[in-house]
Image (cartoon, rainbow, N blue to C red; front, top):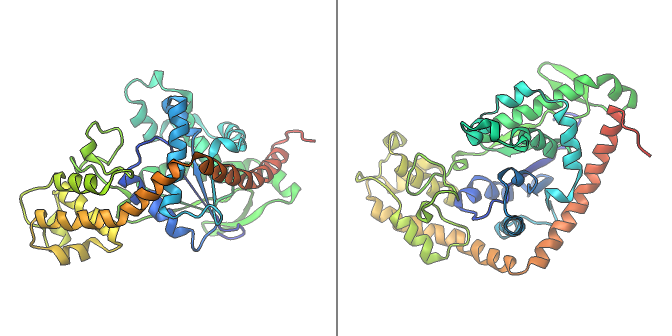
Length: 355
């Protein structure tokens, strides 16, 4: 993005019981990005308050998610890894954005409608304003790119809308202070303080589905533990869950068209492709015509080989909370330097008096 230093921001909620969908849908991609980009990876424990977690469970889940980041290969020295609440400027900028964003914008957020359900009047204000805090998370670091799945694209579009409205509302002040950055907007070159952050859309592995129902996302809230592969599952448990995964009686097709209407089959093929780093087409070329009993054995072997080292390292890290806390503290201090510089600029732009 012209004028702005390229920087990636991403985060995940510490909701506990991490599973294969979390790994393949986000963390694996983040590990790959760190080799060629400046990355900031956050454990968004402020967002987690929208589900009213038990305080002790939230603290434990925060450490577990951090352990998953590190065990998967995210380097806390190369990147900033921290929990959101350590950098209070997230909340400060979120309030500014609450006054920039419009109620109509928030009301259109499909994720709020889904999570609030029919009882919207009893939903928390935090859940309603969740996308505004998400925008603050990203723009506090003036991040130019965010790796997102399809379910977060609408929130990122809102982030861009908030950034653009801030830039427009305070354009004269930004110019007077001389802190604007040139950027391309359509065919025009304009000056603003915040970038219009671009999405980085991953491949099909972004949506890993339940092992018991291929039409639903893999989720920790599913009452059946057989529906998911948890990151702390041992090799025997992983193998058992894959062998019990729901499929159909037909053989594996040789072409992608043959997966149409076969949600469970498509899901298992997708998991194999994501774990092995190849396309679904390549998987079907290797296994087309074979029965799922044979395929599941190969998938289980692959999953164990890929996930067991992460599981072992994650368990080791969880057993050393002092180390995890030191990583979060260091990352928070480094992130806080960037965050405070942004907020000094924002306070000047909007007219808050400072010493």
